[in-house]
Image (tube, rainbow over all chains, first blue to last red; front, side, top):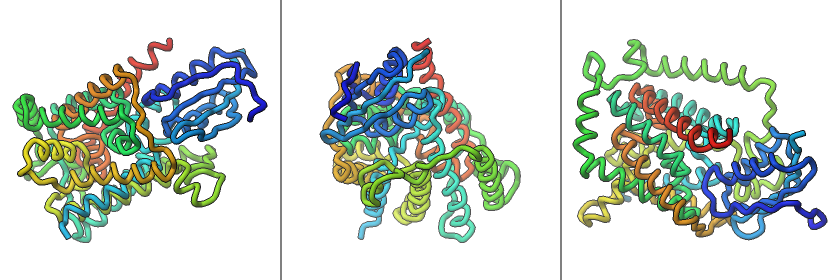
Length: 82
Length: 345
């Protein structure tokens, strides 16, 4: 996914349950349709739970990669409020 | 072989499953109100069903003797409600913070320190008389002096009632789940079998069924070591505190289970490349420590945590455990609302 340039980056490494999910969802809510959010997180439960819950808000997971130990990088396309 | 060591071995298996399944009752209950996510709740339900049937069969055939905890309604209500508040603040239930200790999450380590100290102070420290008085003054027994369960409350055979409840639950579940596709209930839909087991998180059904089987295996193994009860967490941590405070205390089956959980979760995390010491901000560690203290106080007051009461007592149909379970859920929902839902409005 090197070709995708994120519009915004969110670093929730070291945060405890459920802040990685909450922060990601609230940030996505404020973004315009089609904008890309990049999230760095190191909490395994959220790495799986965030993609599961994106679908409900109609956001789109572009990629999820394990980059270093528990640290993952998610790329998400915001659905936008309008 | 020393019989308490079966606790260590089963603990390693349990810890491995907890880590792979990301099993946490804090998330299970809280996510229902917070994210409308029912995944882990379904995992808890599957585990309870397996144990409900398994315990009834083992009790019927004489493999185990059921040992439901007493109904101490005041202590169950207050203690478990405080426990439910504490686990949302701590960011994990008693088993969740224990397995995440093995993943290297320092916020979980400060939470288990809080749980152990809060539990110890309530079991043997300055809060012990409060707990004993509350339990003593609100204890209710069946007419024959035994601990109250749904079975002796209705005057029914335990196994028969357990099978009826299980059958109803399965039918209701089937009706509710109909039409909801769930392609990842067993695990990840892509990747090799090795990746599905050791690299990706397990599906809720796989996790729930396996935790149910761990509970079933725990009962006779623990009983053989002189502790007639299936799984637990908080009392195991208190046992570790007592051993540290005075070396003449030996570790019991449950404390070995705790050590096993940490080792098992560590092994699972290493294989998945998910182990790392992750140190949150000081304020977060203080928060999880405080949450842990509340959990320890609540669990000992009520006579069990989410594992001792909810996961192990509910399948025995113990009234005290059912009340404690409801109270844990209500405490967690209230706290999730105050901490996360209301600030967003």
